[in-house]
Amino acid sequence: MPNAMAVMSPRSMISKVCIGLALAGLAQGASSSAEAQDKWPSRRVTLVVPFGAGTVTDATTRLLADQLKDIFGQPFIPENRAGAGGTLASGIVAKAAPDGYTFLMGGNTTHSAAPALFKNVPYDPIKDFTPIARIGKYPSVFATNTMQPFKTVQEFVTYAKSNPGKLTCGHGNSTGHIVCETVKRRLELDIVRLPYTSNPPALTDLLGNNIQLMVPDFLTGVPQVQAGKVIPLAAVMRERSPLMPQAPTFHETVIKDFEVLPWVSMFGPAGVPSDIVTKLSDAIGAILKKPEIAQKINDMGTELYYMPAGPFAEFVKADMPVWAAHAKSAGIVPQ
Picture 1: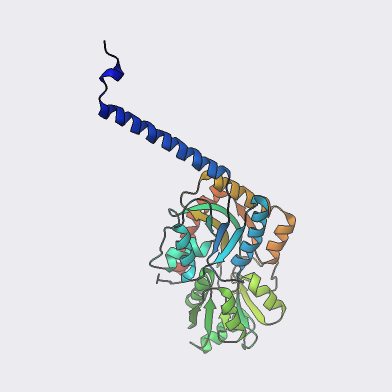
Picture 2 (picture 1 turned 90 degrees about the vertical axis):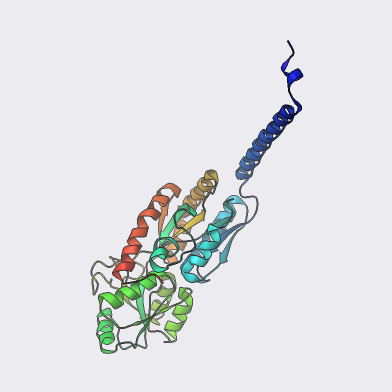
């Protein structure tokens, strides 16, 4: 009886050789991919910041980048890409290769609030990203400059009612946007809202009296309050912050139950390998446990609130309806 090789057609032999080569290629590719992940990072990693230099997100990113470099032995480079309410930078990261070399330092502005504020968000906040870790939350305060005749939030309301259209509220993120519009709607005030690419230029205009109101985070707000150049009218939390205890809350003064808590985090594009996610998430957790780092972050006006990748992914999903409700309550229609 002839053996199988003797009767095999040339076409069959070629087909088997091709299949064998293809399988070998797949195996080699899988091995190379696994090896690349094991050696991650083997070059610089970019941390895209959706706001300008000098913001609390920028400061937090730079502190974290230095620590990550020490842990992994490769540079972690912050790259500021401000614009379009944080969606410009987020869109860039959403389209980046999921190889562990491009991440977004995002938060409530880029993920929870964006769909409620903008009609055409160039990404899906859930499907287009890999959550890495939540880092902390940012207290904020509704503030004015010393050139205004009002020094308390109650005096502000009285003045605004008597001077419709004369006050301008500037904002550099989604928190300020929602606070400005909530104050207008809930207190029935005629105030002009003016958007900025980030908080530092808005603060410059507040100090120059080009605008009369804004919502700085504590990084930019506390030093100006301590210097006597900015007056905190109302903190945007249910309870007073130990970083600015002299500032009453909206809840205890003119808008009961009003609280907006912005947060900062790290995301990668969708599809980042799970082992890279784990390495990076665990490294961030270890960094935030260092007492000296925790103190530095606290001094920047950030309250630590670490979440590893798994719980953080669930948090992002749950937080989107919260910010949608804030926007709806403020009467905001996506633009």
